[in-house]
Image 1 (cartoon, helix red, strand yellow):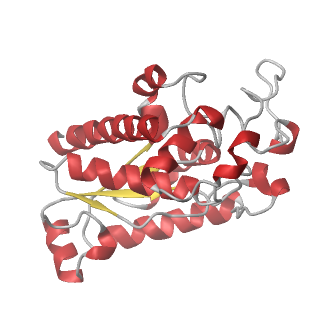
Image 2 (image 1 turned 30 degrees about the horizontal axis):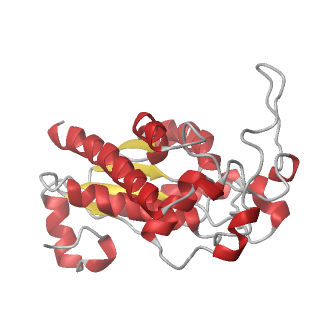
Length: 248
């Protein structure tokens, strides 16, 4: 089977995909702290893995998965170290440059697939700019929110993804064996939710205010089997969206 990954294809093969009006999936993620037990690349590894699996499942739709943008909006993790972050202007500029490159190669449809909670507000705010400044049809989703209803029944302590938690740790155990620092797993738990705030009032909070460990949730509940089930749920939800785009 021909690879779905942009970086595995030749320029000629990509031109042919564009001529067939393939959907380009653009994964966007982050490099940031994930507690004492996981590497900082969790969001990038998981988002890229889910996108690849979803594109392969949606085999009746012509899909190309672009390389994952590994830096995003992660100021709230900076206090722990190990984190890269964009400011809002840079993030917008980088995304727009990537979209314009995709457009110049003859593609018309792009699905931005996000794998980091800190990117959600920015991506939503950018969509009108992308519509105005390109001729692309751009949609955006966050894969773990798209699959939220399917993830809940698979979990013991959570309704969905938190941070370096039962879900992310399980998925890393399944997708990146050996990445888990198993001796530190007993320390990998923290607040179950963020700090309470005033209703309808927003402010920036460092993760240092929410959790001493860098974890929100309880990674001690993680397992390989749970990770495989979560990956399957996320890939199927995203494949369903790709199939809808293919029919449009």
